[in-house]
Amino acid sequence: MSEPCTDLFELLQRRYSVRAFTEQVIEPELLEKIFSQAQQAPSNCNTQPWQAYVISGERCRRFAVQLSEAVAAGAPSLPDYEVTLGFFDEYRQRQVDCAFALYNSMGIERSDKLGRGAAMLRNFEFFGAPHVVFVAMPKTFGMVNALDVGIWLQTLNLVMESHGIGSCIQGALAYYPDLVRKELGLPEDDSMQILCGISFGYEDQDAAPNKTRTVRAPLAENISFFN
Image (tube, rainbow, N blue to C red; front, side):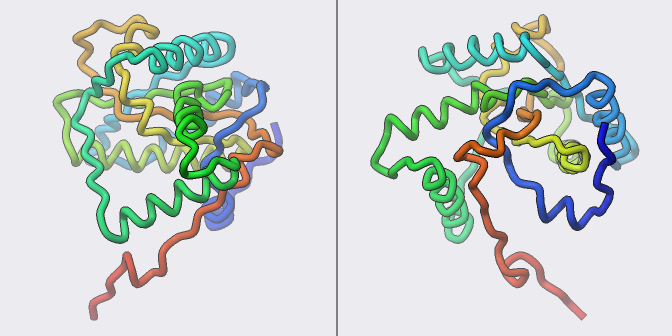
C-alpha cells in the first residue's frame, strides 16, 4: 500500500467522479481499511444509520452484466423512496452544464439519443468498476438520518481518494432495489431502503469520461454571511 494523502483541501480539490476503471481489484486489506476509516464519520446521536453492501471482483462483473441487461430489457424501476429531483433555474442550469461537460468529453452530441442512452446504461454496468457498494438505511428513517448517510458518503469518498481509489456516487443505482436484493439474497420485505450506489476502483486515466471536469458556483450563490 502506498502512503495515503492526508491533506484535506488537496483531496477536495483533486477528487472528481470517475466513470471508467481498470480491472485491478483492491487488495482486501486496503478495502477493509478504507471502510474502517470511513466508519469515523459523525452522525446524529452516533446512530450510524448507514448500511453498506460491497460486491467485488468477478461477482461484481457478473452482476453488472445482469443488471444492465435487465435495465436494457425494460425492467420496471421501483426505487424504495420517491425520487423527486425537480431542478429549476440555476439548479437546472448546473445540471445541464454537468451533462454537457460529460457528453462533450465523450464526443456525444446532444442529438445522439442512442449514444446518450448507451452512456446512461453504463451506470448499471458500474462503469466497468471491479467494486460496487450499495448504500442503505432503515425504511423507517427519514431526512435527518439521510443527512447522516450523506456525511458518511462524503467521508468514504475522501478516504477512497486519499488511497488513490476513484469513485462515482450514483443515484441511478437506487432505481432497481429488488434486483439488488435478489443478488444479495436479501428478503423482498427487507427493512433497509437502498439510497444509492458507488462504483469504485482504480481509475482508467486514459478513458474519455475521466477527462470531464465541472466547476463550482461562486461562493455568493450558495453562502450568505450575517453579522
